[in-house]
Length: 349
Image (cartoon, rainbow, N blue to C red):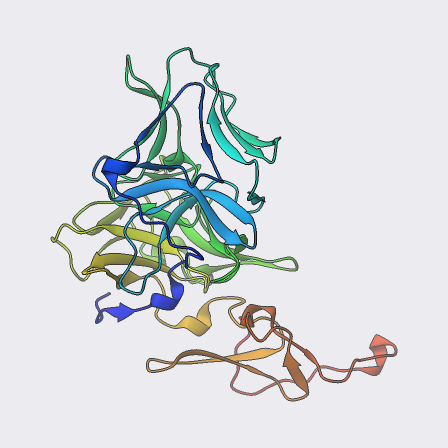
């Protein structure tokens, strides 16, 4: 699918306090027995200066250990590409990310261990590679004991493998970076799918659920379940999903992100801004749950998605439309006293 570049700065994850890092001032290696401390703003920076890893603020006195593009965008924001503890942020005091002398990588929340790799080694280093991959490496044989690329959050980078064990999970909203309701994964029939997985319902919406895989130009025969976005902008998957970005052939920094609105997009970094060079879904209202229950979705190219509450309903949350709408007047009494009516010209999603 080809379309003009779209600027979607609102979908880029915002930094509360931008941390600018340069390669000369920060190492790219953490040795055994060393730690990165939240109070010190300690960072690892890739040798090419493109990526930084450290504690990133996600709220008032709450932090996640994350990886981001070290240079702020033209609007001053930073772009996160990986988070370790998105659903369990740590305190802004006495928290640290440590590589023990035993080879175990441990995240500590004010003295309490909240995450660890359970790796064992007498000679290992934590290194942030130029690819954006954070690896626990044994220098003698260059083998990886652990790597961030094996545990993506909502983003994969160029030349990062997407496998049968990989799952992208959207953020809850543009300001709430905890796990949201949308997932991208390889299904049991070897097809890459998008699913809406909320508290009340789970439903696949891409490829179109009423199509058989081969009618959606997908294959179920290759069970190796492997996909990759290369540095030139071509994506290939073992389920026969193949596409090229609108700027294919040019070498740029790219990321493939499952956004908060449930759409998968490839972004290209160009002159300090992200532009969309591919997206999975063009009709946004076909994304399940995008407006929440009791609401109607409309979409235009000029204004984007619009969610409207049905007559007699009001928005539950004016800053997060996915919460849907609730009755203006609280319903009481027995269920048998109510009935459903059919709305013409609307399709249930």
